[in-house]
Length: 133
Image 1: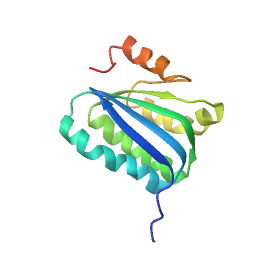
Image 2: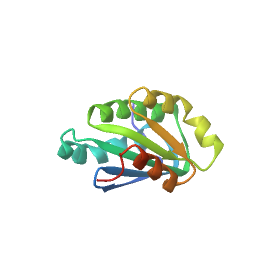
Image 3: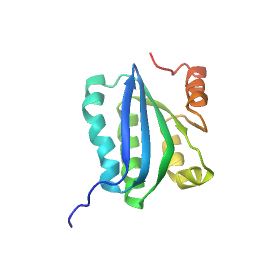
Image 4: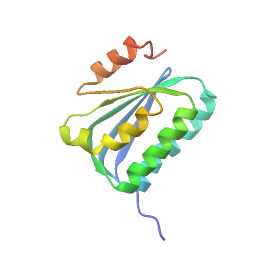
């Protein structure tokens, strides 16, 4: 089966041990894989040292079931590679509903929090001693 062009856009930035990922648009599996590929080298360099993730999904519009399955597999891998907590920013209730299964999956591996502002997510991370180092 031929692959499709990636749909959805993500930007990645590191600040010490804090990884911020911003999502935009609707993702297919190939679009979700772009994120995993972008993190392979930085996570290998971290060599298992603890890190935290802030997902900014305010411009995210959803994803295919295959994209969600891909993200779940990546979260499992990332938890094994030092991910210790996840905070996510959602601007709409629909986004929270769409990610309910994925959030439950992630919760089984690492603590997680969601809010409607990046500042609230960063404050939650700081309360748990998990802000940028």
